[in-house]
Amino acid sequence: MKNQDTANETSATSEERTLSLLCHLSMLLGGILLPIIIWATQKSKSQFVRFHSLQAIFFQIMLGVIIVFGVIIFLILMLASGFGLGELNNQGNSDMPVFIMIFMFSFYGFIFLFVFAAIGYSIYIGLKAYKGELVRVIFIGNIIYKKVYG
Image (cartoon, rainbow, N blue to C red; front, side, top):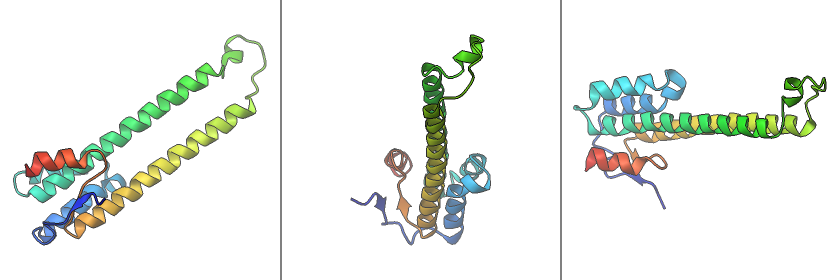
């Protein structure tokens, strides 16, 4: 099942495709601010740029929310495991158990891989946008497509 609509491949101009590429590469170039600026300046001029800029904005918001929830869950699990309670109770045994260290390294490794996978996915979507394709981002692409193209 392909999650893309290539019917409008040739209808986008070179400038529209470049702006759409920049929106998706904004994770590397300027964060969420760049697609917001592009959306604000181009929303009434080009449906293609509007579609891709909104996808980039909401994709970055979605990633931020996922990372914040992941950190909150990590902190809750750390507190539930008793990490740091020895220091709070002044028991003097402040050695970090091995399983907590493994858990921490696993968590940081997961965050690292998650962020690089998201950057890779943004590059992939950006290159497809540069080719003039209306590729839809996972979870939010169909909603934005319906809002922009009806």
